[in-house]
Length: 481
Image 1: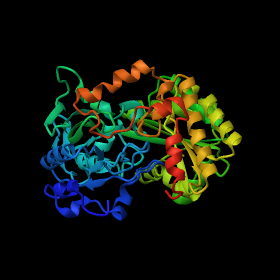
Image 2 (image 1 turned 30 degrees about the horizontal axis):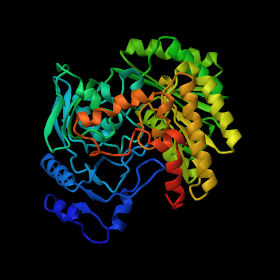
Image 3 (image 1 turned 180 degrees about the vertical axis):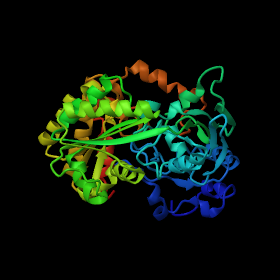
């Protein structure tokens, strides 16, 4: 679009022209999210109120332009990438914590509030918002709702859907309404639950009522090093089987250690092949008992190094090493393709062995960082996007890992969503009848073709051919990400 279109002119009547992006060179910054896929939007508009959003949707509808809601663009499945020349609706200016109700442990926030900043806002009240994605210093609550985000501390407390009571949304005709509310229980159909994880395909969220929980009385953060990924995986399986439910059980392997040690200096042993980061919280007596059991199980499986964080500063250093591991991988390769499959934790040892064997077979490095306690894998396939053969290997490896997850009774995604990345793999777990039934939700919301088209559901070509062919075509058309 080299000249202003009628659509852009109309959008500039709703928001200031400085908040409508339409020139090709400016649109480049919105062509990708945290995934490996990319595509240019037709235009981007950055509203500051629900009233503006309602008008923007009406204008887009008049011009037959689909709308793609977008938060911070940290998503990892291509969910915020524009398809079919859509209007990207960037919600980052709606960034206020509107209300904190300490007595009822509820906060009302706008979708552009950064996850970490919500936690900081409620901390003085002795409360916390539990879902804590590794990108929490940048990702927004609206994006978390769209993808049903998780995080390291969701093992004991649950993911986004367990901590959102309701949300205000704008429907495809511009109507503003609430799904759920700010109370614990709302009678009728759980439309709140339907909306969470819908990846921006049903409506646009403009306010969110989140559930808060008290900060724990005591926290103990422990690190165990192991001489093999298999030994660490067996330890995780035993912790889960013991009945202890830690706040978090995280794992990183040797490749991740090589990246994070020089970046954050957590002091991991040089010979460690895998690190477990285990955190227990709650009443002091319970924490002491659970920490003792966790240490016993780690020593049973031959931990080569064991320590407990002595203070909050050390605890923060250990968590920085885990939560910023993905960024640190830039030391090892220019690009990574992050998979988000889920398996039963008891199948972790064999699955990790298969992933390592796959890395050797395809001759492509795979660094593993995972929410080990709930079986949420995050294999990071390292590659150089300027080399087409490496891109192809990365996509093949990703597909094989997803197939492994399904084969052992797992799922395609734990928190990143389906988006563009996994849509071609949905037939692994759903029949055509299943997919048709789910697709009926969009017209039920009046959103058929309106919001985030081309996402989640596989195309006819994907059903019949290579699931990742479309991504490969877009990537290799221009070898710069």
